[in-house]
Length: 398
Image (cartoon, rainbow, N blue to C red; front, top):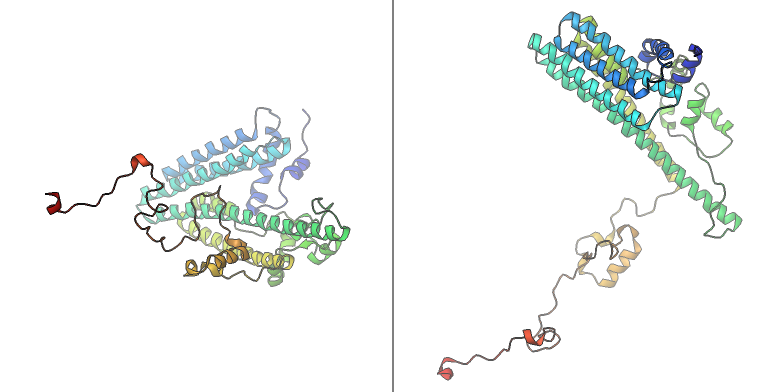
């Protein structure tokens, strides 16, 4: 088998933007190990993921012992585990044999490794020193790691949702406009349609360019910028971002990767686990607040863009009149008119909930008089009817 080119492997498998710990301390080793591991067909990305988990659990075993020598060995094994955790993705990109299950497996095993190593590292120190602060540190590490990845996943889902809504509204407006201009039949879909271009995609492909220049070069009026307010408030961020991207380092300087490395590698190596964990937690929390603030500004940009594309109705932010107290006392025609006027409170169809009565009559019908066939015994079969005879008095019976 021909020897692989290191430069070609790095260009194909390394991310365009990554954590500085990965860029400087992981990728140089991982790409060279990848060249060797890629020669063997039985080595698959999922098997590398399993190997990373087992080595991570081995590092937790050394962390639990708590002595200086075991802490150094545990830190080295944890770094090796993280290198293998990066190799599985690089191997999948190199050979094109990655799977959806493999991505899920990699994510779950990362959380398992962090959980066991945090409990073992802090638990081992607690057993040696009886310092209860180590127990609190274990809870902090597990909580922050969970918060970081849950928050990142949720923000990603919200960003994709915003993009999808903008694309949908833009496409619908383009179809309506095309139908008006070309006098198309309502049932015939409009050809083509407006294609939405997002500024974040343009900046990702051209990290060194300016936003205004990319907007002009796009050649379309549908360039959506969901980070306009953030760049307007922090213009210096763009210059720092460009400088850092030349070395593939992302501006998010202290993410979940750096947090783990400082807690499980730097702290055990220098013998200052509590102080390193506290400083790492503060740095991670600070950068997470920055990300949340940036996302909040992005949601404001999204609201502004949606208001421009589809202005909200006048009833937004108000309560429908027929939901107020005493609505059941109004005439039935008024209730129906209110329902027809506001589609937000549509009554369910019969097949949805047959027993649902949105506006029941508050007062029961008048009790039928005795002897009236339509309200009396007319609906009861004759054999089940009881003959009602006037009761005789005691004197007449005797």
